[in-house]
Length: 363
Image 1 (tube, rainbow, N blue to C red):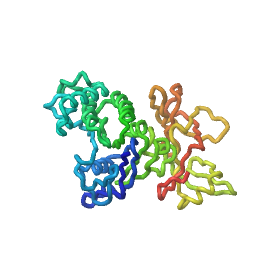
Image 2 (cartoon, rainbow, N blue to C red; image 1 turned 180 degrees about the vertical axis):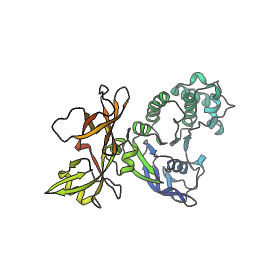
Image 3 (cartoon, one colour; image 1 turned 120 degrees about the vertical axis):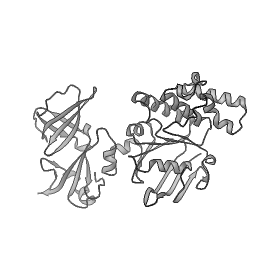
């Protein structure tokens, strides 16, 4: 059983806290992704696990060993980089075989292992070629093959798909999921691409400014974000945020957004318990906002069509509500002109409410 444990891990570069008191346990055979924007500390965290950076404080354990002072070659890890890092003068066979040759594995065993790995990755017909003769996706599979033959306890991957075109990324995402399950190994992955994180991971660790904000399964991250950063980072298009005030009148509780109000009496006690004041943020995912061209009975909000973005299977409708823009997802057959009046409503069971001062989730 190979767990990876980060125990109050920090890495400072001068006054910059690239990784700031991070604790995380990655279970045996688990696929965990560090997800965050550039500068969030996710790659530095991976490099600390790999031994490519030295710790400022804390402990890292891989399996039964504390590896703080072990060099990368003794940590039983294999790392796949964004840049592939292949040897240009070597054939594909020799690139994949390189870690085995260093360990002085017998030639017959090397040939058998390389061929099996190449077949698994669908690159067996490229074994005699040089990296420059391969496409980006083929090179990435060679880099994966070189990591796989080592049979490491842990795979570390740093943005391995970011240099591929969109179609190939989709294909390689599926291949990586299958590969990780087939190899039954622990995998820690770094990306800034939320689609990669959501589709591939058992759990996602959202990072920003060197800290882990939330660690959970993809659905939990999406449905129950801990704050406005996580809520806005996950989801495409991102969540709508609308400033509002909590007001009580004659026993009725509302969120007053200026141009419209939302009754929240059923959440009144929860809001009063958790909010630091009356200034809140209403969060609505675009798929939870419905749009219609005619007014019907119900809690509808008047808006103006700002722009329509067709995506084939659906459309994104930008609506001007007061001084702000609200994005909604609609059916592909919805038609309207810029400037038309539209009426929107949203699923109150899916709404989110945040404290404007702390940015933390209330509902």
